[in-house]
Image (cartoon, rainbow over all chains, first blue to last red):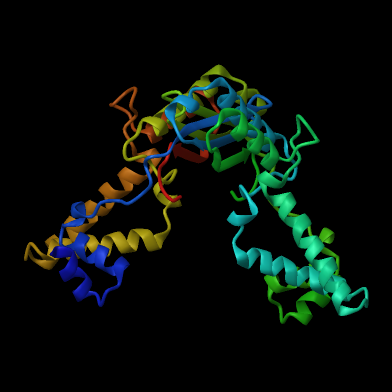
Length: 183
Length: 183
């Protein structure tokens, strides 16, 4: 009822409705709808005595698999991969890269290719090839596995899925390099 | 010279000038200006066999101090503090909280206080008190140290600075809780 009133008062704007309810002290009535049911583990890897650190969450379907040494070994291998990559991946997979970023790179690659004065259909092919190369550089799943250069990370995960018999998803990761980036 | 041309071509817009230079294949000419000189360590803490993980960077002035066990103990204590806090801190200190976020909370607190029908100067005081409480909840430096409730984290760091004799800065941290947040 309070929610209905709040939406009415704010012309159906959900964000403003939540603010309205908070102002009225009714925020507790609103339950967060996050997906809290996934299993898996959060793992870390510290390289060089603290020069580089990686935090990673990998999900699976059951707590049983989360405690499996094969699964835990995969998480450690992925964390080491991220720590050791240069340039380091910025996204889990191509599906996680915002389309604005891909569009902007494509535009730059097309402009670069035009400088070659080649025909337009060749330019498009060159640019598309460069976009794919760019995605390979910034996406973890597209990288070559450092410990086995015959595999990509995507293939490594697929192998583990078929071996363990449960779906496995790399959820997210963060990499800190000592002293990098903004102050 | 290329940079000058680029700025001219793009009416002095720095972001567009960089894109212009990249398009012309001259991106390599632009050096990144990040501060790479800081010392310190990146540390991690994994709680509950992988249910919660924290990654933290703490800076100091020399590599000598970075290898000091007192400094490393502080980093571990801070990582454990972040893992154990509920709600967990979102920012290092009040100076890292975007002013839009503080302004929005203040507005909500003022509206809440107005419901009490108290005089305006009292309402302002109540709201300011609530803003400070909000900052204490979301900022690591304002929290009470779990291992010694007589100290805030800011005071803990200040103690270590005077003991070790070098400036110490908590640079950044990330906390992953298994299955939380967006899918």
